Length: 267
Image (cartoon, one colour):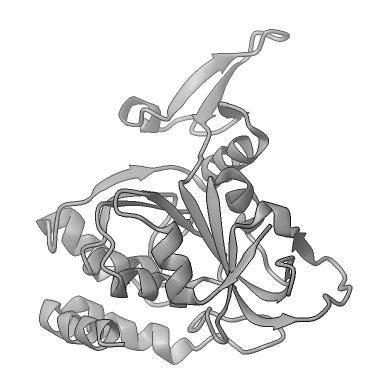
């Protein structure tokens, strides 16, 4: 059953140096506060997994937390590049970082395979690319029924998945609604999970199209109001577009970023 913890307690207990960590959320409900707590606690040598790395991963990479990135797209949405990510790849600052690139469909299917307890997933994809020649987690498999050669992608099973949601009840059942990505699959695929929520309530009200993660699949829940900011949480607050725009000049310059990092790590 899920344990109710503070954010600092949850990160200290569940995120360890050298872990494969998936922080998921698609444009919405991105666990930014949790990512910054990982920075504050000084985690190192992480394999960061995310379908769409945006500014929270730029921050983690710039802080020296990441040794490796597994992803399908990276950028500051609506603004431009992730400059801390580029600096790490192109110049090895603050440390070199390995990358493993996939398609969105490939990443989603990898999470589904991991959540299903399967070793790999099969899809029609990556055709016409050379990704399989450069990526050990992409291969081919021949259909035993038709003989068709299909793409196979290895399952993703992170050590820990971190997501944000709107609500949890006091038993640790989690409820989210609006645009959802692969949060459910990431939690089910991971060995352990930390869910930050806008609020903890006595009972979860039924909502159309809501995703409910039962307490028995969640390791820990932390109440973190505005924990997705500057992304948005439907029903709670809007996307802070100014933050995304302001991140570009901060991240472009190492000295400016380092001052930002000092402020974050100071609490």
